Amino acid sequence: MEGQDDTSFRRSRTMQGSTSSNVKTTKQKRPELSSDRLKKQQQAKLRKLILTGLATITAVIFSIWYLASQYTVAVGEVTYTPATTSQPDSSLYKEAIAKYMGSRPAERFRFAINQERLTQFVADTLPEVQNVQVNGGSSNNTDFKLTLRQPIAGWKTGASQSFVDEQGVSFANNYFAKPGVVITDNSGAKADEGDSNAVVSERFLRFLGRLVALTNSSGLGTVTEASLPKNTAREIDIKIKGRPYYIKTHIDRDPAATVEDIKRVVGYLDQKNITPSYIDVRVSGRAFYK
Image (cartoon, rainbow, N blue to C red; front, top):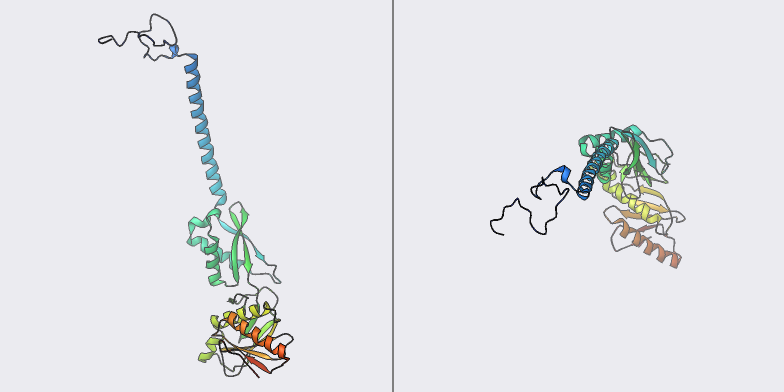
């Protein structure tokens, strides 16, 4: 009713806590006038607040512990795959990995390490490394597993020894058995001659590695010899097990296309029962034999 005092009781309003004549208004907030139901609600809210606080503190403590346990202070054990025939110098690889982490502090946390980028970094200076993976760890040491390249062919010029794997990647440190194919240099090129640069170039070794690997897996047989003929540094002559003739190839061609041409010529010669002195597939789309 208009003009009615706000402190007076109104119809259909519930009184809480007491019927004492000292209660002046239902809006009055006094603990001794709280109902049992309201007290339980307040206690539940307080309990929930405490539990939430404890859960938050526990989560923070666990997060700090986890981050601390994941932080890499030093490189731990380094293992290798596949099994090597000689023991690699682990200090080389530990140093390279530590240098990478030193340049990227955020990746000192084990879970944050970018393994692809780490592999590229290590392989830039140690190309015999094909892959680097985190392999667990203890305390603040992180262990790593390295996949090393296996040579498919070897090349020696002076005191320098190079190897090449089936992907055509060249490297100097080999921890496996000596490759079955060793390049024989009959070119006569000297170290101070321009053509000799082509002999030891990445392009040369990449072609050789892919050529040998593709030939071995083509069904033609296993490559047993590879040589550079006289007065050339771009031609590679190979010999396949069980076939007495040489096959002349050229590093300017695609290795896969070269192997396809070899298969066609060898298949034709086998069908015709012809044994030539050599096969020439140096020109794309053409093949010769004599």
